[in-house]
Image: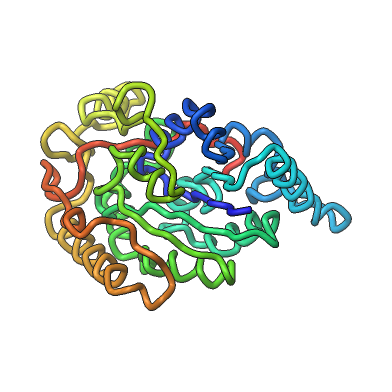
Length: 308
């Protein structure tokens, strides 16, 4: 069976994609596609793999892989030729990224653990990436509303200078799951086009159902400032442009966008044979927004249960 592990990243419209897939069960089934989303994955199927809670005792260490393998066999018996698994917490968690000021510091080991349950099948690892200034701003805004850290200058400086880039995450995934195909696309090009993305990833045209909107966007700047006022913090701490939260200054954004441009050029040049880049040539230039670059929309899954 073909296995597609959509690993995120967070804040790259994963919820919009997951909702489309969840609403398209009939069309997917007729096309020979089975879908496991966060509700299925976090309902016990992947227990022991998220890195949260106590480690499994040695006698139970192999059970997650066996449990997954059994469920894959059941999907194949029902006629599925492709299993589409979408769970951004395979990469890690936003909380851990902020705590360590690093971009998915243990992504390779984590995804390898999940992929072990699909041994013997043809595995593709899918990853959506986003310009770092917009990515970290979205992570900060989302986590802040849930008790996460405030975007103080020292934290923002550490996020700008943290050494891990998307190319490092991609290379780590390729090394961690030998034989797997790694497929990468950008939030800027594909966030509002889950139907086109699914067609590219699966080779099947699945009609999109429901409203054409992105879900779980970062709250607007005014709402974030209102939250700070409610908790007794200074709303002036939050900077923004065009009504949108943006904690980084112009020089910081310029540096982050430059790194992203290098990563995209590396992908477009073949990524050293490590990954396939899905973006159309015309979509590789980020669209300008009030923040400088990147799409003005945003989407993410609001459930963080069992995150590492």
